[in-house]
Image 1 (cartoon, protein in one colour):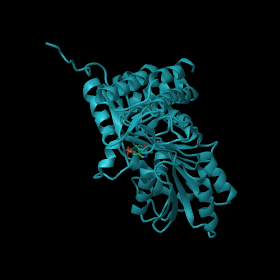
Image 2 (cartoon, helix red, strand yellow):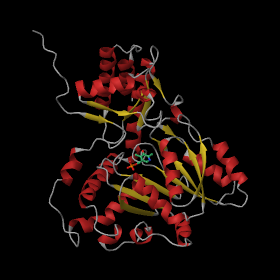
Image 3 (tube, protein in one colour):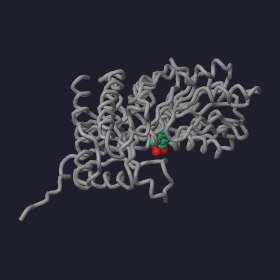
Length: 402
Ligand SMILES: *Cc1c(COP(=O)(O)O)cnc(C)c1O
């Protein structure tokens, strides 16, 4: 009798683009009794946590924390600077760009959307045109997504600022870095970003539940001119807090903060530039494998130009329903979980089963990526999915030569 053992027993790898893998040290920091919130260790840690957040964002200005997910950060940021009837420009590069624009619409703003499709970055020329047409400067803010996680496209935020400056347009530049912060290079102050939002469950390696809004003095001036800002979202008290509760407009997310403190410490101990470089090498290994696989069969990277790819997430497609078949196989047989395709096909469209994504954000190292790629290759072989040869060699070359 031959056994056909299941190979999923062992440590899994959740290779979805958020929530990301959590470091043991983060988990251990959170595994503790409830702390006092009126004094002691956690209260004293707050100024350091805020300073460490600003270092990750590369800003000297303001950082605020919200209990909520990325959608909450979208609403928080907009609530401070966009009033009903205001116009915002949304250069959308996928599901998340449209999502942020939709939150603006929900707050009564008029969202002018430029749709760049599912596989292309923001086209700066088209943004320049839209700004030039806005002679009365009615556009109050430009809502950009640095990495749109649905298609894994990376947009040029520094270039976007240059286009706004060249147009002499006073709109605020607001950027969603929920997928990219702590993965892809981002420089809030140097790139002239006025407002940036991020979450804690992707590059920051903490369970979902906290998000962050960073802003500068230009954004504060717009906030000060608002007719009203709802109390809970108002960033004024949060950004100038002296009492623990003021940071959160109520009880703080105690255990998230313990985890966040350790996660930020890990990022700064490694060095933010080194964190970006690590993501870069690991992403290039993934792309090298995908290039080799795609020489035969249907596997394709969603973003063809490497300069427009995020190093945090990779969106892919196979033929037919092979994306879903592969995901199911590697999860049940190997303990490796890949991300579903998002925003590439309608939920009822069978074509959605072609798409999938790889999350390689945050607490990810070389052996995890080689395991991810080896697992994918085993899955394609077992399922009879045609693929080119040499993918693992190509990935190993990238890692060997880094
Ligand atoms: C994950 C993500 C969001 C949404 O975050 P939630 O925590 O799920 O609300 C928004 N934008 C981008 C770019 C993301 O990757």
